[in-house]
Image (cartoon, rainbow, N blue to C red; front, side):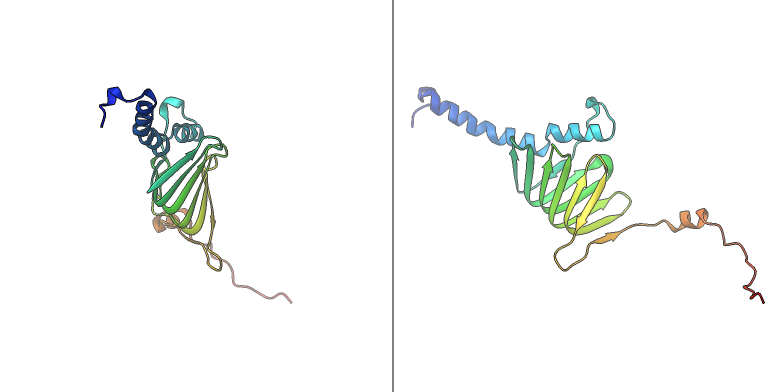
Length: 168
């Protein structure tokens, strides 16, 4: 085998590219600047105060032409700025539309204990809104934590009313 400095320039460039691409790819997908900028615009922050959405998975791809990042296999999403954690089989981030589509046995947990389960969950970043669809023939499940002490303080007892009387 020849030492690296005796290889043709093309081979050296190809080897360098092969070594750089995984790092560049992971940096762009795992913590894409577009995700951070999108998040900052959502909450009215300046670009110096970006809030990342972290996505971990077995495989990640990014299509620069369509500006869509796709993560597949054991997807874990954390959006700490909004207190959201999610798991799914696949996640797609559509940077132009500013939305994230989670699919395949999706579970979303919000800070405070609220949760959503469904087959497909679309998170609209600008609105902070979830749209959930079930598997065919099934239903979506949501669990909302209600603090009873706040409910009891907010509602006063019903006023006493006179019994119903029939008029003649």
